[in-house]
Image (cartoon, rainbow, N blue to C red):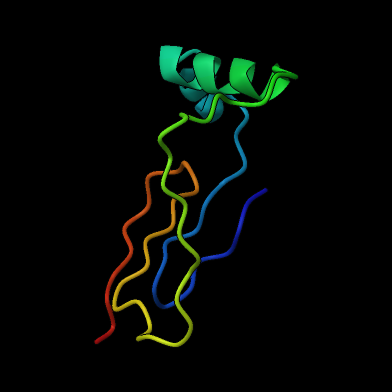
Length: 76
């Protein structure tokens, strides 16, 4: 789905052809096949699960990926 340009991102045109390279990638094929699997992933016997701690500090940096090549400028 296209989106309009803004002060931080360039506009994007909708193009299904632009996604073909991603869909033909061996990594993408393996990931898609793993979603079709009905078997739960194996959990090692020596897994040491720990509860998440309460509180703490916010993450200083968060990265997000949407698959398109667009520059993301930091306004700070």
